[in-house]
Amino acid sequence: MLVFMLGVMLPAVALIGVGVWHLRTIQREKSIEAVFQREFQQVLAIAEKRIDARAFEIAEEARAKFPDATQGDQLEAFLASHSDITHAFLWTGKGHLEVQSQPDQMSDSETAKEGKELASMLGSWFDPESETKDWIAKLKKIEAMDGRHVYLTSNWVSRGDRWFYQSLVLFKARGSTAEHPAFAGFVYDTDYLSNKFFPQALNEVLPSQNGNDTSHPPVIMVRTAKDHTPFASSLCWDGGSPEVERSFDGVFPGMILGIKLRGTTIASINNHFVQTAFLILGALSLLMGGGMLLAYRNVARELALAKLKSDFVSNVSHELRTPLALIRLYAETLELGRISNPGKRQEYYEIIRKESERLTSLINNILDFSRIESGKKEYSFRETDVADLVRSTLESYRFEIEQNGFQFEQKIDNDLPQVYVDREAISRSLLNLVNNAVKYSGTEKYLGVNLYRHNGGVNLEVVDHGIGISAKEQPKIFEKFYRVSDPLVHDTKGSGLGLSLVRHVVQAHGGEVAVESEPGHGSKFIITLPVQTGEMQQAKGMTA
Ligand code: ADP
Image 1 (cartoon, rainbow, N blue to C red):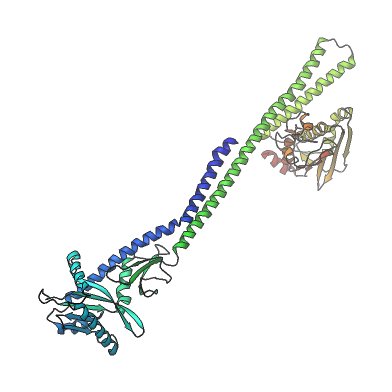
Image 2 (image 1 turned 180 degrees about the vertical axis):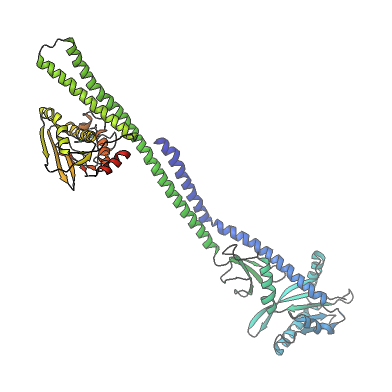
């Protein structure tokens, strides 16, 4: 048991404990959320880089088509072939700033207003004496470091009572020289950015989603710092707030990227994981507990059986030794020929006979038991008058029982049906019950045997007024080797086989054996034998 506890229970409990502790740590430290957040940060960093690269690419493409410094009158044609661009401008020297707006994108008044505002803003930008000309330095730096020729920044415009985000692109105009610097640029409109550029760029950033990979794919959006609703989003964006956000550093100042999982939140994934893990751990613990309980019960049963067997061996040896010693003693005494009194001699013969009978019945029990255990016990069923069988079985005992001071009552009904039984097996079962009744009678020496018709079959009862059996012990006494651990029982010899044999025999006859008993008031054992046809019994006999 100790080995079982140490070897199985302790590791199992430790395993469960570690599992629970581990899950609690995950729960407390929100480890899964942290992993997601790290991943999302990385995705957003990559997204920003790619979106920047794409913005540069298309701005460079447009710059390549931009009229050179001497072709200020070509701006309108440039705009006509670039519907995504709202305003284009060219600065060729102080006071020479031309701003051209896309004519059909807004109402005339709005276009004119925006054009004017842009012109005034750019006028101050391009003024070599102005303070706000640091973008020229930036442009130079970009050219030197990245080999790029365009500088992108944001431009907010108000239309009505709302503010709109535009992207402003600036570059050195073709044909610009050190003596005659010329700068040009254009403005991408809000609609183009939010309906075309960003959605496309965002979708390209995300891994392709064919819907089967995962039920909660990452989705991404971009918003302006002034507004929490998405400015643009990838396909499948399902609303809600992003789990992780990242501000654009360079190309789209004032824009913020956001990422989340479609249809769920990281917190709920974390919770779900922990809950499922706890459930699995719980189920495994239950299984483990169940397994251990079974193992424990098995070990306990084996131990109990081992003890019963060793008790059995010592009981049987004792039971064999006593009659053998008596037989030897009386046989030797007779052999010496010193007993002249015939009465005494007769008494010795009787003792020798009785003790040999005891030996025979004990050995019969052991043989029957071993046949039953090895599945070799065979019965030969014959149509029998049970009343006759019971009478003749008891007859040889009656005298002895009564001589021992027992009050013996035998009630046998007259109109009993014929029953198919194995005569010897039933007779031995009856003797086992009678022997028990005598053995466990204590001072109340009464033995009753009743045989009567019951439910078409017959009932055979053996009644005593002896020590009785407690309700707790009653189901156990029919088990092999089992003996009640009561001092009254321990003083009596026995092997613990009798009742288990009775039950086996009776069941092989299709019947049952039951006990009714009260400690101190005696016991009643009832064998119920059904009336069965010869064929049925024969079939049973083969398999018994
Ligand atoms: P045993 O050889 O010990 O008598 P049995 O299988 O015949 O073995 O009986 C099992 C146990 O049932 C006995 O040890 C005894 O404790 C109890 N028992 C059997 N018959 C009686 C009875 N008539 N009165 C009280 N206890 C009994």
